[in-house]
Amino acid sequence: MSLSSSFYTALSGLDTHTVAMQVVGDNIANLNTIGFKGSTALFEDVLGSAMATVTGVDQTGAGAKVSSIDGNFTQGTLETTGVNTDVGITGKGFFVVREVSTNVNYYTRAGHFNLDSNGYYVTPQGLRVQGYLYDGAGTNLIESLTDIQLTNRNMAAPQVTSEASMVLNLDATEASLTWDPANAGGTSNYSTATQIYDSLGNAHNIQVYFTKTGAQAWDWNAMIDGSDVQGGTAGTPVLYGNGSLTFDNNGQLTTVMPANFSSGAITFGNGLAASATTMDFSGSTQYGSPSAIQSVSQDGYASGYLAGVVIDSDGTISGNYTNGVTQDIAQLVLADFVNLYGLARQGSQLYMATSGSGDPLYDQAGMGGMGTVASGMLEEANIDLAAEFIKMMIAQRGFQANSKVISTTDEMVASLIAIK
Image (tube, rainbow, N blue to C red; front, side, top):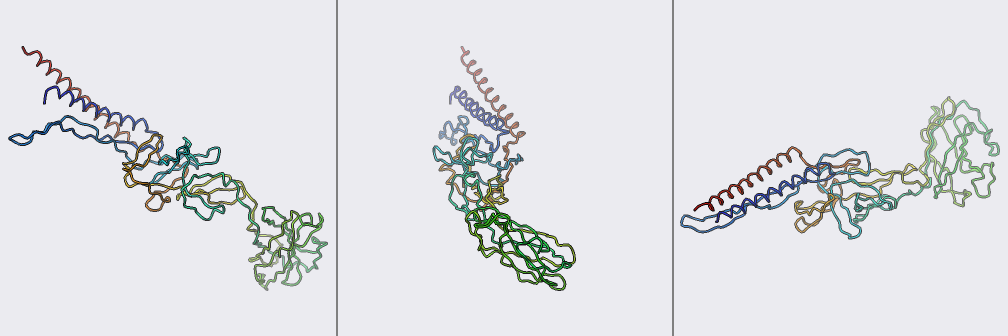
C-alpha cells in the first residue's frame, strides 16, 4: 500500500472517534432526560488488502469504522414526583403509546403522562397511552389494546339500598309503652335516624322508633315523612317497615336476623317504588344503661363524580369518586421484545419495533416476567457520568493519536518530496 493510504487510515480513525465523542455528548446532554437510555459506539477494523505471499498471507488494515451504536437498557433510578399520573417501571417492559394521526404504536420508559382536554391519558407530545379497559361496573377487564380515557367514567352509578345494619343498646329500665304512630315521639322509648337510597341515588331519611312492650321485648317502627311519599302529607309520618326484638336475661339479642326493613310497598314522591331491604340488628343489647346507637350502616349510595385516580403496581388505574366508591377503570399494558437492541430510536424517548427487534410481546405488569409499575415516580436516565467522562477522555486521546498519524505521514511525504 502507498504512503498516502496512511492518511485515509488515520482519517477513518478520526471519523470513528468523532462518532464516539458524539455518542458520549448525547449521553451527557440527556443526563436529566426522564426515561432516557444511553448508547455506546462500537468499532470494527477495516481490511485493506489480503494477498497470498511465499510466507503466507499479507493482510493490511485500512483503519476502523463504527460497527454499531447499541442502546443500554439497564434500569434507571426511580425519582419520586408526587404526581400520581407519573409512572415508572421497575424491571422489564415499555409503556405502549399510540400516535393518533398515523395509528402507529411506539414504546417508551418515560412515564410522564397526564390527561388531555378529552380525558385521554397521554404523553407530553399527545400520544395516547395504551391499555385494557374495564367494563362500566369496573369488574370485568376487556383485554383489547386501546386508548385509556379516564373521563369517560367521570361518574359512578348509584346503588340502591338492599341491606342495612344497626347496633344499639336499649335501656332495660325503661317502662313499657303502647305504640301510637300519630304520637311517635310520645309512645316510643328511643329513636334514631338512618338514610337509604333509591335506584337513582336519591337519599330518603328514615326515623326508627323503639318501643318497649315487655321485660325483654321491644317493637321497632320505621317511619318516613309523608312529603317523601306519593299521596302523603308533609309532617305526617308514614310506616316504612316494622318488627320486633327479643332479648334474653343477659341482655343479648335472640331474634333471628336479619329482619325485613321494608317490603317495598312504599312509592317515593319521585315515583320510584322502594326496594325491599333488610335490617340487621345483630350485636344489639338490652342493658340497664341509657339507650344509645353504636353503629349504623347501609350498602346504598348516590352517584359520584371522579375526584382522582390511583395506579397500583400491576398497572390498574382506579377512580376515586365523591360518593366514596373506588372503581377500576383501566389497566396499563407493558411491552417487551426478544431483541431490545433491534429497536429503532425515534426521539422523545420513543422506540419503534423493527424486524430486528421482533414483534412486541404484551402483558400485564408483574406477569410473564414484566416489571411492576410505580405510581408517582419517574425513571431517571441510566447514565453513569463518571463512565462517560472516561469514555470522553479515551475518545479524545484516540482522536489526538490519529491526528498525530496524519501529521507524521505528512512529514514523511514532505521528506520524500524533498529528495533530489
